[in-house]
Structures are given as structure tokens and as C-alpha cells.
Length: 453
Image 1: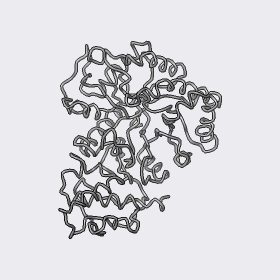
Image 2: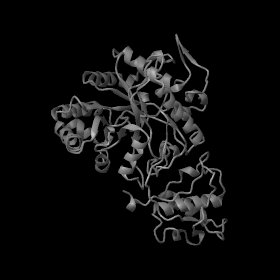
Image 3: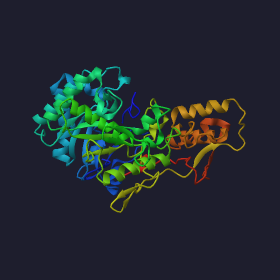
């Protein structure tokens, strides 16, 4: 494995604006109209979606935001097997929103990282046929010029043959398939979409130099001929560019589908490092800085992600629910200078449930063996990833852990009657904030889903 190789995949600042990924795997998602306003207030003029949720699409109508709409991997076989199915999908999820709603759809993302090793080749045979059918369906719908199909790919589809970026080539087991995909994209005027995660490079290798993950780290450079690399993003990106050059596509446009840094869930996933990475990324693209092999930045870069998602799978790690530059409710995690005298600003008009929390009762017996079972029950139905080792609430005592878990469950259940009483004599409702105001460990009050716009 290369020192700089990203093993697992995910506009921010593009040459003409900000873009982001907007996921909706949340127990209490914000109103789509609130999210659209959040993007507008922060200058995000491009958004990448993982599915064509009707409420999301409607909220994007006439917003001035360019859209990449996604097709889930589970639909790839259907799209690959039937041009009619692809035409039906385009009619329902692209044509009608463009013609009737004024949604500015520019791309269709056909699947997401379909060649990940974890999928055991489940989507390998269907990704290209699905891409071809969706593009054909766009052409038949009269949208072939304005909307392009692409496939967001994980950075593990390429590797270096000699340990430095200039040795880049496509992964041997999918080399011919990747060349076919790139050739098809190139022939249709569509970009190649790649997800690059320096954080995951750091997580995958205990010997990975921390400073090499950042744009301002001053890391010892990797020297590759006349090129010098001081950060993993450039090294990874140029490995792809070398692979494209080696296979006859030196001018292939590349956009970054996902890049970012999580703020919780692991010791290196924290507010300080997340801010450092994202600010560095914004600064360099605002300055028009590219990589040694491509001096201009990618035309589109989509930050991963806009808001946290508390219902995402944690199979990759507890950090998976904490990629947002905003908390789940659109509250700011940390300041960011977006350039042009624009600073990050929080969501407006968010409505919350009552300011009350479910905590461990003052007289609860912490030695009672049933307490741990109650905590496990709560965390089985709510998000307790902030309690993990190295996380924002990690290292706390049993009382604090219990209060956090009970409250997470209570808020997930909308503070409904009986939710706190679920823990019998162990729990109590309080109107006094149970944490410390200057602590990164947050005891949430849930948004009122029934009172959002």
C-alpha cells in the first residue's frame, strides 16, 4: 500500500462557487427548504444528492443551485438490464423536475463507489451498462447536452506501480473496465468523478504522518521526479491523473465527488482537525491552486458533507455520522472563512422541542448491574457514537455516559411521554442543561420535525 493511498471512499469550492454533499440518513432531518436556504446563505451553488427524494428535489426548484442527483447502487442492476427502466427513471427523476419545477440538474450519479471491495463484485458487472443506459435515456429525453451521467468512484480504483504518483494506473482487476468507463465518459463529454479522503488514509495506517493529511502541514515531501508532494490529496489526485495519461486520456476532466473530514467518533475525528482540513481545502481552491500534474483545481469539488446524519451505518467507523460541517440541526460546529468576506453561517428558523433532557437520576445506584443494560438499550436505538474512545464525550464516567445515552434515546423518541421513564428508577427529566457549555460533548435537544417549514 502506498503511503499516500486512500483505501476507502466518500462543490466545495469550485472555480465558480461552493458545493456540498447533502445526505438525508437522519432520524430527524431538517426541512429541505431550511437546508436549501442554508446552502444559499453560505454560497453553496452546487449540491450532490445520493437519491432523488421528491421533497428535496422540490425544495431545490428555482434555487439557483446546480444539482447532481444520484441513483442508489441497489438500482444499478435494474438500470443495466433495461433501457426502458432507465428511461422511466430519467422521466420521473430528471425530466419532470427540469421541465416542470425548474430544478437545475447537471449530472446523474449512477451509483456510488460501486467497485468497493466490501461489495464483493456485486455491482462490477452492472455499473457500466447502467451508466450507458442512463446516458442513452437522457439523450432520448432531449437532455443529453445539458445533463451528463457519471459514476462517483472510490480512490481505490487506481494505485501506483512504483510508490509515487507518476506510477499511477488503474487497479489490475478492473483495469479494462475502468478504461471502458473513462472512454464512455469522454465520448459523452462527461467528467470522471472521484472521492478522495485523506482522513481515511490516516485511519488506515498507524504509521501515516498526520501532517501529510493537511494542506498546511509542512510534512516531509514525497519527491517524484521534478514534482514534490507535501499533502496526500495532491499525491492521490495525481496518481489518478497519471493513470488517465497512461491510458490515453491526458485531458479527461475530473471532479471531486466527496472530500472532507469528520468531527467526532475517533481521536483524529475532532472539531480542531476538521476545521483545519476544510479551511485548508477552501483556501487553496479559492486561490486557484491545483496539483503538480494539473495546475488548475478541479472544476467541481463537493464537500462531504453539509450536515451530520445520525442514522448512517457505522460499519466504516463511529465517525461516519459526523462528516457534516454543520451539526444535524444546522448549528455551526466551527467557523470557516469561505472567502470574499463570507463566513460560515448557521441554519435559520429551526424549531426545537422543549429544553429538557433525560439524565441519570441523582439517587440512581451506579453499582446496579442493570444500569449498563439500560445504557446499551438506549444506544441500540439512538446515536451514541460520541461516547466512543477518543470521541467528544469519550473518557467520561459512568454517570455521564448514562445521562448521555438516556438523553440521546429520549430526544430520538421526540421526548414523548414514557420515553425517559423507559429506564425506570435510573432516569429523570431535567430542565437544567446537564453538560458544560464550553465542552465539545453536547447534550442535544431534538428538532421538532412536526414544526419545520
